[in-house]
Length: 175
Image (tube, rainbow, N blue to C red; front, side, top):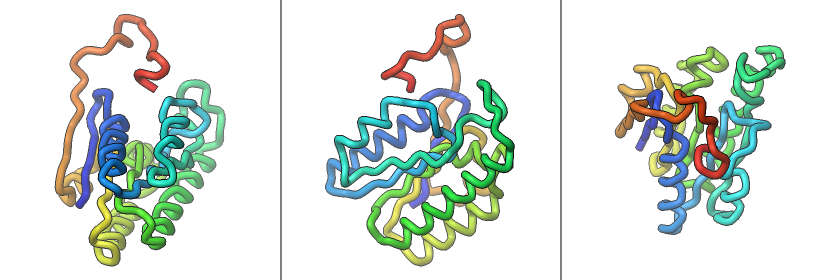
């Protein structure tokens, strides 16, 4: 199964984390690989440890690309995205996981850090070799090729957000 959580609204990573928590509660093993988030701290960085070893979170991104003070060369972000996908493939091959969450991979593709085709190749490989593994892709701007292939697509729609009133995100709630 391939699930996609996309859209401009908040809640894509949170939905994936909720699916992970539910799966762990049913005795499943879940790996979340984060493609963009890196040095930024968020609540899940510590919370996942309470579900270990059944849930593992690996931050492989170098942070937000070209915004919020990012000074890294683009090549470092591209290399990180390539390494994250390679790591996800190695972990799929380990057969240790029931669910693989590729968090913000849609963003990585939208930013041209990794190609649509490389992700499609990964999805095909996992589907053909490990058909019982569920994959969850998150992030804005899911490519139509992913949506067409998915079994479930949920779009988070931004209707109202305190950010538009100048209120910053709250630690432990939004990150």
